[in-house]
Image (cartoon, rainbow, N blue to C red; front, side, top):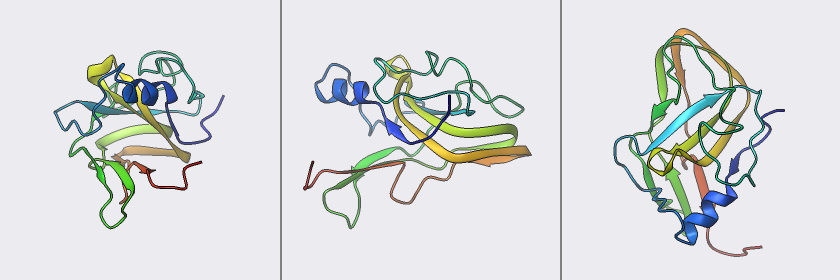
Length: 157
């Protein structure tokens, strides 16, 4: 078992695009989306049916420690929009989440999920290596282009 890559959950995206679930990536409401940190003891599966925080593999392996609460943090300043200066590219972005005065050990990846959809998993990002904090601030720095960037202009293969 290991975290080896970033992924979007196929089941979540297909159900959102077919209106089976009402996923609004632009929902900026308080607590609409959360980020939870995980250690390398899990193996996320892009093809999992009904992926969600609290269900396997996200039912265990979450980091713990001072300054971190199970379930993680609510995302703030959420936007889903066309990437400025890059026609045909969309981005999902939010403020950099951080846990102040935290002691977090060996975080290897982050699950982003929709709380209003039974904690439906949207995106998983690998940190490539493990990171820790010792009574300090643990931050997840989101790329300037957003946590997720999608090309909607060809070639689409």
